Length: 538
Image 1 (cartoon, one colour):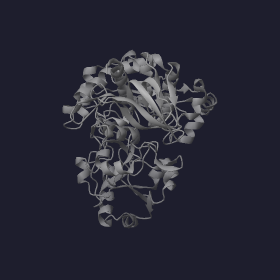
Image 2 (tube, rainbow, N blue to C red):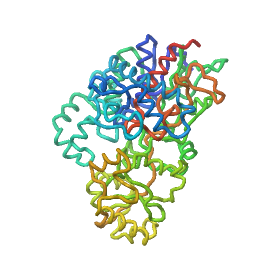
Image 3 (cartoon, rainbow, N blue to C red):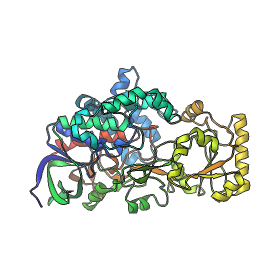
Image 4 (spheres, one colour):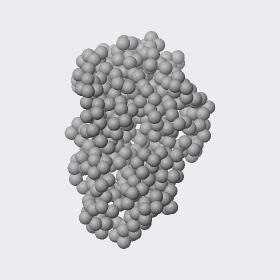
């Protein structure tokens, strides 16, 4: 083994949480090395839309929008899973208090920039909800200043050349070709200037800040082991670089920000048995940091939590992935259980609760459940049609409902009765069975934008199984309100801090935001952990 490399702080991972932590440590005077397992920078963050939920943030207050820590905490408490307050209240308080400070810091110390997204909190009826301002979207950022690092920014399965607001204005999801024609000059100019948006721009902006502050970054450096001293304190890591083990000593501490464990088949089967269909993150998210921390005694929590959607299949890096695109909420689409009966409003926000078997609703769902629609819906949301051939058999079509019942195993008589009942309701515009489009503010907004109900009547009829796809697991290492890793007995592991999907997310699967469910929180935890790491005395 070569001679050890010494730094104040070692950050493992290169997503948004990792980069914020590295940037904060460097800004406070620490020497920092970022170790990235792959040859690509940015992890799941770079692949994302970059949406960032931060209550009481600078941009909303400058726009004259009102918010406060008290209101944000009221809202988080109201949206949290039952019973979580006992363990998560201190973390909620830390996250809400530090989120605005984190945003101020990265605006002042990096090239990352944001604008307000015109998206309300999804649970507007609950205390503390806000109509606008908490959800921020990254604006475009140039990667030319990164030099050779620019080619290492991880690409995405979603376009990263238009901002979120531009994509909404152009209706990118429904009309991608028209959207690109509308913004053709903008797209060409951005590609010529190495300018990107969404998750790519967030990572580029943060990485520019890290490099300007003197952070080092090593690619293809897979961390295999956490080093501890005789007291159990984490004092460094061992990384495999070019096939050789290299020791990195950390005088102050180590920050784990290695992503989730969704691509580790054993962990996935243990905590999401028989559930996951497609995975949306980099295939290198195999829980390395989680497993290393567990080996030195770290406790875990919320391992059955994840960021979940129903997704169509897409190929990424020659592997089948999920495309993070909402595909179920259409006026002419319904969910039915194994008996062919509807069981919920298809527009409800927390639809993922039904897909996961060990949630209360998921455990009582008669499986397999299916989305039932017809070809006009597929033609209208034509990205489904575009991607359906990536996995033959994923989308089932039939010339009649009887044939569709045969292919899906559903009882034909009940399926036809359910579709007929829905069509009758669609004719009246009122869902007397599940109140679709009226059950919540979220549903009312969705119905106002795309319509509440439309009949399912034009062959071919279509079905796909209602199985969850995972953008990233949200269970992981239990931390305290300073982001420090904990043991099962409640003692702290000196020198070890966690941020991102490797930590146990304090809000879990039931999120307070429509999108941007992790980035704002995880960047905040990178910021919190950096502050604590540099203030603690081993």
